[in-house]
Length: 237
Ligand code: UDP
Image 1 (cartoon, helix red, strand yellow):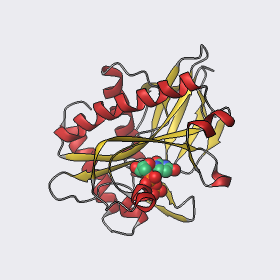
Image 2 (cartoon, protein in one colour; image 1 turned 180 degrees about the horizontal axis):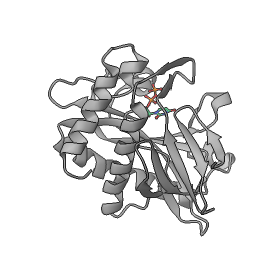
Image 3 (cartoon, rainbow, N blue to C red; image 1 turned 120 degrees about the vertical axis):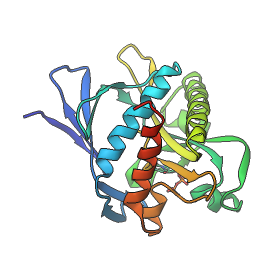
């Protein structure tokens, strides 16, 4: 029986025979508003495992290093073990969620240039927004590494925005988490799924992501399946 190393809100992390690799198991559990809202999205784990493995493979092909090794079954993905940074890097192309609340800009406003934000990964503090100096004071990353992370996040945004655009989807915003390999190289970890991205239909602006759960918009399962259908139809899966 493999050892459970960690259980989060949407994933379990299992040890493998190789100490340098772990398995990520994607759950159907969904939470929002820092865990205050809880629920289940049927087969979300299956959709997210497939989507995340596919999107990480797309990034690898574009030359962006990630933790992906391979998908092992319908809910589990084998990845390199990383020392994760306590930072969430959010990239935004269109105003939604907390950016609208912070700036007063209307939801759906297209940003002239992508905006990169940093959040301190700390549940007890509610993942506060950090600037570069907060990152330095908390020793989360030295300035050169932080610059590298932001540059990497912008490059990922270019690859993913173009990829989703071909599928008739607007990549509104998304959250990334990076980690370090034993040698110190920065690698993209965690997941990229409709739990961590906002994806809107390019024509109808219909929300095809976790906002359907957060805002009780209905047709939550259908939205996740629709994203998978489009990505699978692309021929990369
Ligand atoms: N996000 C995430 N995990 C978090 C916070 C945000 O994956 O803990 C993602 C979210 O799905 C969205 C983007 O980051 O795609 C920006 O989220 P925002 O700051 O608007 O936060 P929200 O209002 O959604 O909590």
